[in-house]
Length: 207
Image 1 (tube, rainbow, N blue to C red):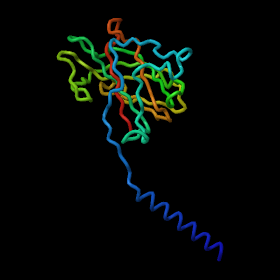
Image 2 (image 1 turned 135 degrees about the horizontal axis):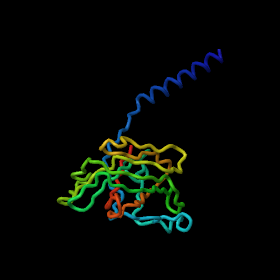
Image 3 (image 1 turned 90 degrees about the vertical axis):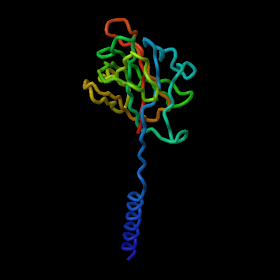
């Protein structure tokens, strides 16, 4: 009888747990793109030098705090980054190139860490009105990057890219993995050398 009572108790607990799980509302966050970086003729090689500037005090200006349930209405479990280019009037960003480096900090006073680095190419999808509701300059064509390549990653989980080379927005997506701050450094984008892109903006969305 004791064994039967124990089994019935376990069954009741299991049923109550299952009912609670299915009854719990599922929170879905509809988050548009938020601008986290702007560079002008972005050739920012080695703004974060880990050998000499990896500590919190040496962080660059403009690092971005990842939304969290502690401080914000929404909580970012994963991020997707997109890149938009703006270059001089009369030209297009199509096929222009740039390089990027992604850094992360676990919190204030924590050391800087490499997350990944790679390259990008802009496609033909025009930004038009920017996601932050501002307009690009008249005659200044802005395009979304349609190709992102991860050349090196320093992450326990694989970063992913989407829609490579389709002339639509390509996104770099990854699990936040406890990072409170991130920073995207843009290099090889002085706007004049070869196919290098110029002004670059970095946008984030999360889920």
